[in-house]
Length: 220
Image (cartoon, rainbow, N blue to C red; front, side, top):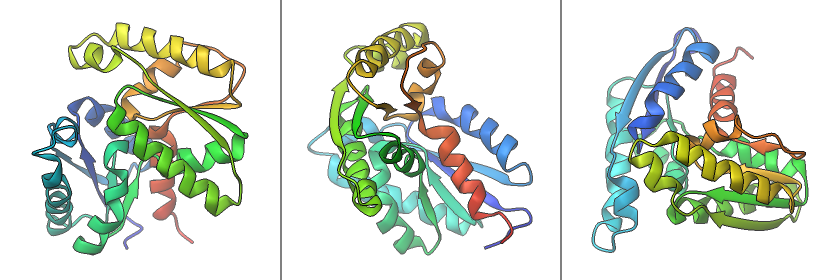
């Protein structure tokens, strides 16, 4: 893997994540060339009994396209597809990083009571699974609770970021009262964390994820 001027592919399930991940890459991997791949129907199709089975193959096809384009690594920016990273990496023959893995590692270090917040049920399940996986690796047994925030995804999908952030901020306040750490399951929720102050850590995936990506290209 190159360390001088890497080519990074971000695989998105929503266009809303392209700009913030581009900004993080410019800050943390300034020498990198960034390529974006987008399938903005994946999240919807995961909830569709007829189309859900098509998602793994579509993800593998996009990762293969990134490999064919010369990518040194791929990062999935959507937690809903994190569990597909390992098989996609094996199929395409290049590293595939999960945006939320670093966040999960930080969460299981932060405290025993972990509150997971999501705006989609399709994201809540894989995030809880990832947290369980990373907790087992760390040798800890946290207590997990979760909430899918009603109305927040519909708001942001309709362009109403302010309502989304207000609903998520209220859920953060509720969760912080009962937990040692709050985890925001989706990268698109990160802006809401800036609008609220609570007494426990509120973890979001974008910066932590891209920091870990940058570490893979740091000279050893």
